Amino acid sequence: MERLAKGDFTREELYQLEYTPIVLEEIKILAKNLLEIQERLKEVRRMIEGQVPQDHVLLTISGVGKLAAGIVGDVKRFPKPESFVAYCGLDPVVERSGRAVISRGISKRGNKYLRSLFYFLAMRSYSRNPTLLKFYETHKDRLKGRKLYVALARKLARVVWSVWYNNRPYEPK
Image (cartoon, rainbow, N blue to C red; front, side, top):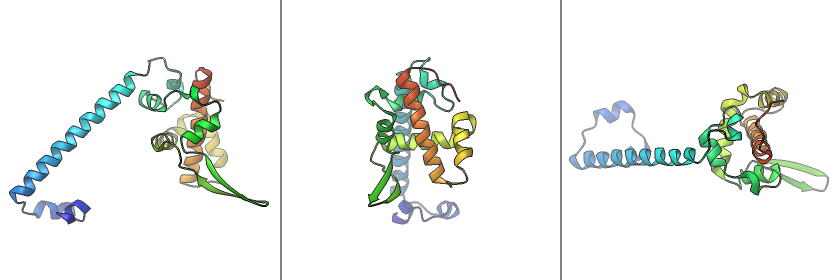
């Protein structure tokens, strides 16, 4: 059972196992629990999406749907885009000692769900968003892999803050 929990079995090995009635019952219970969790997740998504009006300004940004707009919450509580970016955990950690300034990546102190949301939105939609595409083209030689996508996520978070805070539809530059 411990090997099964760790995922040490290949699919073929799982099919060849002979399950005792107790193990089969446990598998049924776990499968039922999984289905219940999936249903609860669908319900939460419907609730979040239901709170976002059809004409919400964030929906004018390519890649941002009702679920993403609902998760962001009200940005009016953040007076500057930097504070919203920090709340998302996408702000850089900078260490200073004398004249030396060292960047240590992102702080990760903020909302991990928003951080993940912006990371995956940036990864998925930068090619369809002119502002993000220009940013990508400008920085792709200097930044590689995850660092580039984190920078895109930070840029997208600033765009989201600006669109919502100013209550104006997104106009790519």
